[in-house]
Amino acid sequence: SDTDLGVGFKAKFAATDEIQISPSFAFLSSTELLGIKATASELNADAHYSFNPGGTTEIYGLAGLNLVFSKISGGALIESESSTEIGLNVGLGAEFPITDSLLGFTQAKYTISELDQLGIHAGVYFTIGN
Image (cartoon, rainbow, N blue to C red; front, top):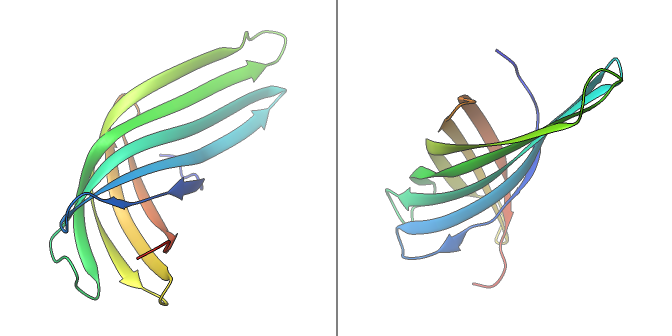
């Protein structure tokens, strides 16, 4: 199994007290070997369901859609080739206050697809507005 570190952006919008919509984008990897370059990124549209809305540490389940975009290019023997895979996300996470305007999160998300993967994510939301 491979382990890759990615960089991403995530947002969260409240639909109800219990349900939030959470789109995200991540640049997963870029590898070059013998002049052949491989890149991958993903786009997610998840819904979070909070089991304890308003709690100090909020626990949530998630489900959603995943799109993975990959490309191989370069080298004299390989033509450029791209692919897109669609999958289903399921997982659990937690959010916790860091300051009045920063909210930390951590989550484990499994993507069921042609490219099954388990993602362990951590990050910070910057609060805008209320």
